[in-house]
Image 1 (tube, one colour):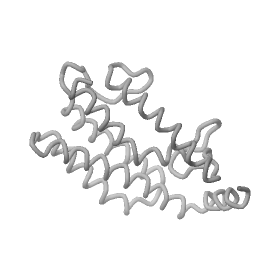
Image 2 (cartoon, helix red, strand yellow; image 1 turned 60 degrees about the horizontal axis):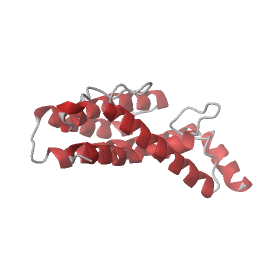
Image 3 (cartoon, rainbow, N blue to C red; image 1 turned 90 degrees about the vertical axis):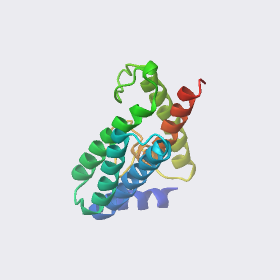
Image 4 (cartoon, rainbow, N blue to C red; image 1 turned 120 degrees about the vertical axis):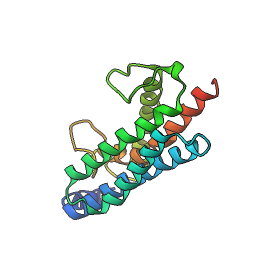
Length: 174
């Protein structure tokens, strides 16, 4: 795997390539978030969810105009906040879910989301290692000691899958 990892490290040192990869991760994440909201708001026609959907559409269109990683991360953060303002409307009030919060998760929905994302991160880290890439050398997430940045990059696209599972579990009484 040495030649593959050398190529990965070489690409990491190319800012344009790294930004292009990061844009792809963010675009996939936001597109899947938007799809989840569209699917679940089809019959509800909730105005707040519609605003979140519109915000996500605009953010997806704006990705191509971002020229720095920090600008892209700011765009992704704002779009994710808008997404969760809509997502929370899909969850029954009995769950007391007001916003996405992590450390520590303050309510059962945040616990389930964090748990799901943790399981997903293990799967993406395993997949990255299986193909011979370095899971710690990513494009979107900051490279830091003991942080599997590439695995976290890949995880982004699949977060809405976890969100959908949590939504189904809570709303179906599971």
